[in-house]
Image (cartoon, rainbow, N blue to C red):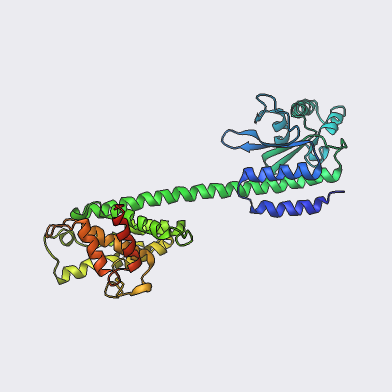
Length: 388
């Protein structure tokens, strides 16, 4: 049954758009050629920019491309690479494709110079090493991204013009797809690099907050760790509740929940005694100060809710907005419990910290009033299991 190359090309092109892994893309293309065209073996040499060399990325078929020791990689000065990089007249080579038999005939003609004949002769020798009858270049602009090497067909027939055209068009699509896949991977790497930098900056900011409030050193990291532990326990048995994005938002919110204290005078933060009414008002402004600091960073929209609302209370008596019950963002409700527990067990100049047992009893007493009972219950379970 004849292969509809136009249909196969359209189908392959649509699939390639969706693939963001270059190696996966290449394997898919080579597998399709082996299966649809019926070649005995096929492989792709792909350009690695860092080394400026072409590496045999994938080989398919039986017995597969012959790969003599040391030939799985071609440097830029390899004759076959130079042949396609120096852009000889494509009209002589099936619009750029090099077919072994036709190359042999061209060596006996007067259509190319003696220098070109020597390069072609060396290029054909490289094809012999790989037992390849056809070599198709894949370009992006003027850059040679790779070479598609094909062995003989299983039926031993010559490659027809329609097949060569198919390979050339496919190679062009592959070049674009590989370029897109590489850009996608580079973008992912850049985003991950920025994410790590942001987390490190966030941790540095958290350390600055702790350093300003001498009596709660380590509070931020403890609240963050406890908040994440509570969320993980809430998520047990139902992995759809909190996805990776929620956990990252919670992590950042935990680290930054007290960032607004940067705007609170140290005389208030480190006062050796209870706060008066004016000082308490200034202290209670810190969630909104935190929002003002973080609001320009649009990616922190969910984390900002944790910063803003972690002093709201389940019965509506909290601040800054007096939110009640389910209106309190879950991120903030989790941080609220962790924050209060750590504050209770921390020594202050005007009072001794409670024992963990005493703090847990207080959490139980105000559960459903100050705190979401479900979250408070998780904290109690963690204490009972000696996890905190």
